[in-house]
Each structure stands twice: as C-alpha cells, then as structure tokens.
Amino acid sequence: MDLKCIFSLAILVSHISLSSTQNVNVVIQGETSIGETDDNFVCATLDWWPTEKCNYNQCPWGKAGLLNLDLKKKGLINAIKAFNPLRIKVGGSLQDQVVYGVGGVKNCPNFMKNEDSLFGFSQGCLPMERWDELNKIFNQTGVKVTFGLNALLGRNRSQIEKGLWVGDWKSQNARDFMKYTISKGYKVDSYEFGNQLSGAGMGASVEAEQYGKDIVVLKNLVKELHPDPETQPRVLGPSGYYDEKWFNSFLEVSGHAVVDGVTHHIYNLGPGDDPNMITKIQDPSYLNQVAQTYKGVLNIVNKFKPQSGAWVSESGGALHGGAKDLSPTFADGFWYLDQLGMASTYNHKVFCRQTLIGGNYALLNTTTSIPNPDYYGALLWHRLMGSTVLAVTQESNPNLRVYAHCAKKKPGISIIFINLSKDSSFNVTLSNYEHQSRNSRSTDVAKPEFRGSKDREEYHLAALDGNIQGQIVLLNDVPMVPTETFDIPTMEPKLFNASTPISIAAHSIVYVTIRDFQAPACA
Image 1: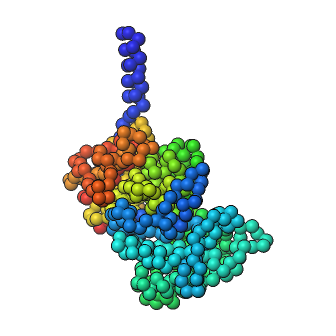
Image 2 (image 1 turned 90 degrees about the horizontal axis):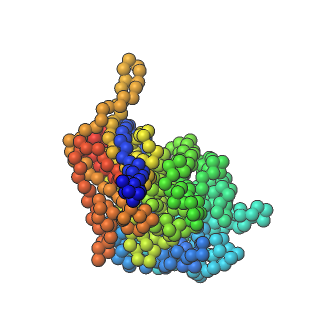
Image 3 (image 1 turned 30 degrees about the vertical axis):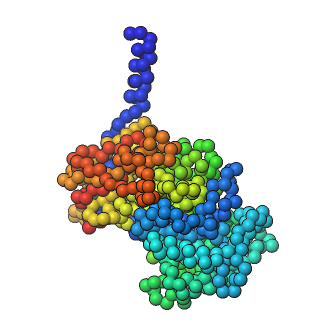
C-alpha cells in the first residue's frame, strides 16, 4: 500500500472514531408532574433602548426601541401572530427613567445621551399617541402584555451610599397612565414594578424593605382601578438578579396576596464579547451552574409566595446587547432552549427572552424582522410543550439534554432533545416509571421499553451545512425562510414508525410528540 493510501485510510479511521452513535434509554415519570408553567410560558421583550445605545464598539439596536420601532412591518406582525398568542413584556434598563405623557406631565422628551444619568441617557417619555400605536399592534396580533413600570419616580439618590435611591415611590404618574389605559379599553395582563433594582442593582438599587412597602402601594392601586378580580392585572416584582437576603426581606415585607409573580433576570453567559462563549454554550457542566439560581428562587417562592410562582422576566444569555457572532445563530438555541427546559423543571411560570427585536440577542433580525434560528425553536416550544412538566432521567451522556411535558394538544407527551455534541449522535428508546405501593412499601419500577402503536411526530432542527454559527435553521431538512409576503413558513412534523428508536443527530435539536405514551399526569 503506498503512502497516499495509508494517509487516506488514517483520515477515514479518524473520522469514524470521532463520530459515533450511542444508544440511550430515557425514563419519563408519567405518574405525576414536577411543575406547571403558564400557558404563555414563552415570552419576549420589547425594550426602550434608542439607536445610540452601543456596547463593544457596535450599536446593534437600530430602530427597534419601543419609541422608534416601525410597527407596520409585515414581518414583525406575522412573527407575533404565529404564536397566537405571544406574551410580550414592555420594559428594560431605561424603564425607571420613563415618565408617561398623561395627566400632569406636559413635557414629553425623548431619551438623550447624558453621561451623568443612569445608563448614560436622560429621562425619556412615553407619549400616549405612541402607547395607542403599540396597543393597536397588540390588539391586532393578540398579545398578552406585561408592562414594566418606573419604580424610581419620586426617589432621590442617597447622599450616603452610592447607587442607592431613597424615599417613597410616587404613584401618581402610574395612576394616570393606568386610568388612560383603562379608558381606552387596552388590556394589560400584568404590571411589573421596576427593573434590576434588587440587591446591588444595575446602576441603581432600592432597599428591600422600601421596595416591599412600595409594591403594596402598587397592588392597592391596581385593585382600586380594577375592582373585578377576574380582569385585574397581576402585580410582579422585583425584576432583578436573585439575591437571597434581598428577596427574603422584600417578600416578607410585601406580605400575603400582594406579589402575583416573583420575577428575576438571568444572563448566565456573561459579557457579549467573551471569546469563549461558543465553548460555554456547548458545555453541559457550565449550563448546569444556573440551576442553583432557579433552585434558590423556587425555594424562596415556596416559602413566601407559593400561590404566585416564579418568572424569568428577562434573559438574553449574553449581557449588553448579546454576542454579535453567536446570539442570532443556531448555536444560541443550545443555551436558550435548555433554559426553557430548566426553568420549567424548577416550576417557573414564564420565561421572557430579551428581546423580540433589537440588539444582537433578538428573536427577529433588527433591520429586516426576519426570524433568527431561536425564533423557530421558541415557536415550536409554544405550540408543542404543554403546561404540565414531567420528570426525566437519562444517565448515559451529559451532552444529551432532555425535557418532557404533557403535549399542548392532547393526548400524549412532547419531548425536546438537545444534542450539544458535534461528534455523537444518539438512538433513544423510552421507558416509563410506574409507582407501586405494596404492604406500605413504596417503589418506583421502570417499565420495559415503550413501544408505541401510533406514528411519532418529529421536528428535527439543524444548522444549514452543519454551521452552528450560521443564521439559517433547517426543519426536517427544509430551510426556514419567510414567504415573499413575510408569512412564517409552515412547520409540519415528520412521522416516524413508533417501534424504531428516536434518532438525534450531532449538534441538533429535536422535538417529539408521542400521542399514545401513557402518562397519568397528562390525562
């Protein structure tokens, strides 16, 4: 054999050894649920940032802020409509500098660059004409609105402690805004109080006890203006990074039946210019670290507010506008869809992606409104994964992430598989746990391998040409591209014989719905 043949054979052998298929058994506990999400668990934000907002020598916001976004864009309208409905949170860093142009507010200025102000911008204003325009698209597309209120109104910077704001919240401007909203018949599902003011805060902070007292004022205002409990907007807070001591104090002071949702933010990928982010996003041990935050919030909610539930009200993965070469690509789905799965297993009700449009971490391209890959992953979650969360175990390979829910459309269950490995594919069989009680002894018994009689519905998401840092996603080998009229393409499943293993290719994300899987929790 000549040298050239030997070299070619060596390359072939190395490829075979690098690429492997592993058999995995996934066990689903179908007897009882471990969590319950809101029906509108998938949520996206609209932010206040003006065009001049820049990080890392780039300005990725364009005209996508709440005050300058073109609300007539067909692509934007169709992308929202496809969720039927989508929860949108109106808010962001500048919301504690927004006044509402109604009642006693006669001067309604735009945000201007000002290095002496919070986040480098002056106070801004939401004109009621713009609120009318926003509600027109919300009504047209069936949006469920969560509105972030300014929680710094009436406060002053502390003369003693840097970053701390002191004094009582002044509610008059919020009252005038709510009364205007009611008079127009606009529907607000929930009001969130402040943005990133908990703990050490981001730029500004408020002490927990003060925050607790002020959210009681907000709750009373909402109850006064919306006396019918059936149509009363929920009150959420504190919308910041989890700080155990601060959250404890806040919930203790606010008391019973005030906070309807305990909200926190997650940016667990760190700064958007981190060159190691592509490694982090594919590292199961790194992704697992944030579970401590979910666990901490869940414990504190169970202790103080079991009736309200935890929300992630903002999460963009990477800080400061996202990562230019990663956030709008297929690879980001390894982080994002894993977060949806993890948050739901820790009984979180809602997960809001920063953003729908604007910045590098948007679900839609900031300029064209064409969906980025994560949009399609989010839309499939919304359509397939029901609100009841099931426990899942698989001990074969940490690179295969698995989450299961009751199917959104009964009967059956829906499962998402996320394969972080670029080299390994998986053949998955399923088993079901059966809980048995005999003579006061209780055991969990794994049933034999599940053999369905109905075809499985499968949605395989992969990157075009295997380029996970590309912006084209394939669904069952078909590129997901809007039509000429900017309609979202149809997303049909492939049907697979129920007696065959589920095949999960390397670097792919797969949703599977099984109609005849016996899960009593889904009955």
